[in-house]
Image (cartoon, rainbow, N blue to C red):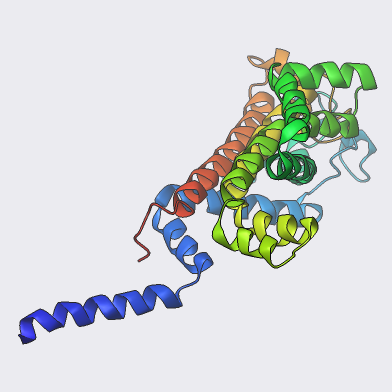
Length: 320
């Protein structure tokens, strides 16, 4: 008899522990159990640190030529100078440039550091804009249905019919090149994805018993939609937003590469890559470093997004 009650007691204690654990604790445990998620978070932590400390880490100005730097020996101010690292054998009488100089005689390392700040700003700002607009449109369409849903979703379908990058290029071409216009274009083409995600979540949540109870108790539309339905429909949006940051950074880099995004001398990885694309054989370091930075940033957000998708999946029952 005792042998049968022991497992029951163990199950009861596990059930109590599950009840006492919050959703975010469960999510955190699942997230940190995946090695790929940890790798993504480590890369993002490094990028965030670089973005916040770029002004102290950068040895030179990201926009000024070495010819404009005070007390810089002009005999070493040459276009596309190879990297010079004293610890790796570069002559100590030469100025140290960890990633060399670009075609305008600017320190590549300093521009890379400031580029991290700009790329993260691009990703978060465009996704925030797209999430706000997409959430409102998707929530209204999913909750009210009928002609409101048809109008909103048909407009979203029209936007989705075009490749996002080509549509962003068309928008920037119409309103003019520039970083702000590029951010606006990327935000616009990203709205349909978030609107559809929110609409699907709202359609499933609005039929729940607690929503019906709120209606029966006389709750108004605003309270039911924004206080009852939306907070319980945002889980897919978190995952989509994390993955969307990677896409936004990649699209912004592509627009800058084409000369439609950030304009010189703004230190943006895509524009740096586009400016030196013809020097891939004569000065490969000027192409390699920006390309590597874009790849690592996109990879980090994708790894984190995949980890969040698995961690927030309610079908996964394990929490330890």
